[in-house]
Length: 383
Ligand code: RM4
Ligand code: MN
Ligand code: MN
Image 1 (cartoon, rainbow, N blue to C red):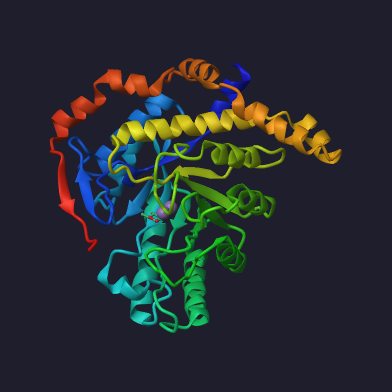
Image 2 (spheres, rainbow, N blue to C red):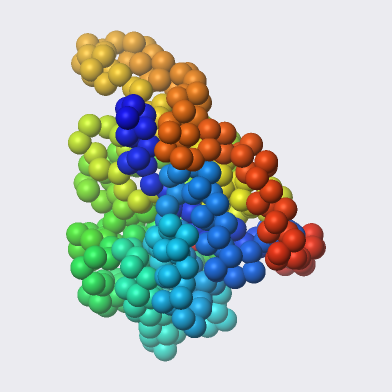
């Protein structure tokens, strides 16, 4: 086995069930013909992505979006497809009760309901063999004075302590942050600092999740990654790409150099790979193809990062050779890894060119014929 084949074998990407279904903007949801009608079909699409790329063996689920009456049937379906269930994502943002927040809500009744959903997700994960709860809160306030920021934090921490105490040993808690949206004044988990403090208050199995779309423009995300990794508090990623805000575009489509630099940190000596998940919304692009391209872009960033020649990099850094050090990174980044990856994928039984293979396979056409559906637009909510 070549080095790159061995490296690919270690790379595992979780694709999100919600990335296969309908999605939209504030203005409209564009439904695609052939989109999966339920979580079973979402898993079918995920299996196709894994078949073509060879590195997407897990699927992250979102509840209640992926609710089924029979979890064991869902688990069996995943296993039959050669997939496992990735992180379980509780949904604390769509119930009318959550208008003013969920676990930080001023009303104890709403907080109880939110905690009960989190505890239900712990059970769901246990039944599906998942090893992580991935928590993103929409909680926050829109106006100064709307609520007391510290009281909100105390409510949030005490709710999370209850959930953390209920986690079985094999499950970890990933805490995701986001500076704004839907809250526009003070989000309760706004940044990596508030997420890290939360994890430190909970315990060693609580770690921070970095979503690439959840930072103010210009933020040095690879530095955050390095700091969290060094503290053993980097739990995972939501990969996507953005130009302006939480755009949820295809990984590596806008800023591939940033993606590469993140992988340079992830593959630094002594680091262990955290959970790598995609979190995207495909509104105008073909969904399965978008996911395939995302996985391929992740493979490329990872392969390029592995090419970084670490000893000369360290020498240049020690001797103050500013551009010599920089050049080591550029050398790796500029290497065309596509032929190597194509061969490595083919050797593992995946496709040498996954996008072309998908286009030639008839999978999308068959899904259209079997699942039906037309290209329709549902109303948005923007004025
Ligand atoms: C949020 C965040 C969460 C995702 C939801 C749907 O912006 O990224 O991870 O679950 O969107
Ligand atoms: Mn996310
Ligand atoms: Mn997001």
